[in-house]
Image 1: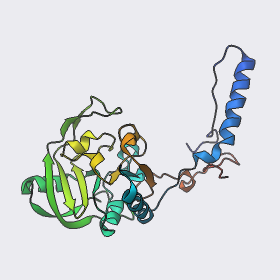
Image 2: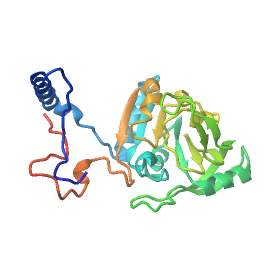
Image 3: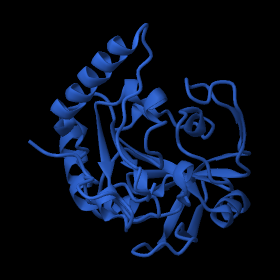
Image 4: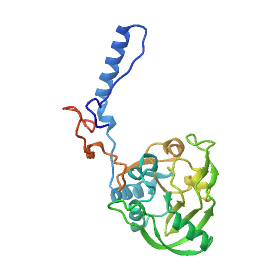
Length: 254
């Protein structure tokens, strides 16, 4: 929050004020000592793709690329294509990406039918600066009605109604498309389209944190990508104006 009071704090409950004070001071010192561990590397799309492809060559589990700035759980639109376009341009193989919100593309895929080839201008309907649709001829690999139940630890038991869905293939990249936006935090979203996340070399997820509950255990590595989107991941890039003097917007590095 852009307030003078914004900043870190430690809250302690104890049997006695002196015990609470001592515990709070100890925790505060430990947080300050370990501050450099809070640094989160943010990769540009091309760098993230190069790293993911290199890791995937020797890994037995998927590399996850978190498309954090387009996370619909944090105000994103789930429709930016910058990262997916970088994977296509790099001829990446065995990639599964989603979930892209594009009701028009999903409708055209349903009209064409499974196995059909369809010309689409996919994504980017929100007009996010620095982004553009992915115009190509896609193969419709699978279709779904968007009605399924979450199975992962975050969405477990939740009933989803994402409207018509489609799995679209372009070269070695498969893209899950829905008619309503939803954070990609449950493997059931992809299994609904007969795509098993663990069978892929690279996963692109429109999520920031919640995906880790269901995808963390199958991931060899998680890379956070700073692709276009309204959910700014680096606080140092936000236009703060009211923070008190000396308040850092990024963790101190070693």
